[in-house]
Image (cartoon, rainbow, N blue to C red; front, side, top):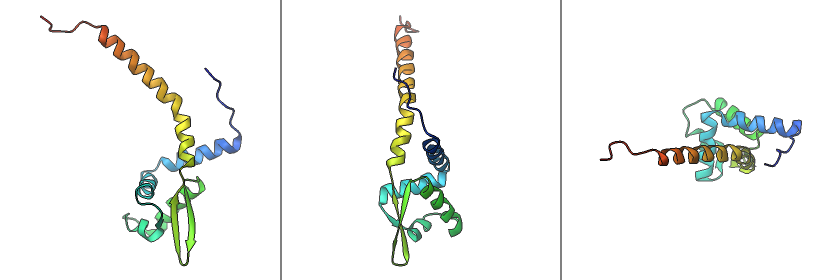
Length: 121
């Protein structure tokens, strides 16, 4: 089994920011919205949530700082766009756990397949 790459303090801090951003349901919903509808002005995003605009702005700031969204100014509007690269890093981090659980489920399936059927007459 290959050894994990050593992470630098900077990359570990970046991963922590991404996981912290993803820990909040509102922020995950903002990401889903941007994934499904594409880049959106901040007002269009705000219209989808029942919260004060400053609260949503704080969520967008956390997402920006984690690198999960980017902001572009277009006249007086701020347009937010999904940035998927940090999510690929999360997927890479989760991949060994997925393999772990697939193996465990395969092993469980083997045990269940080897058990005699109850009620077989």
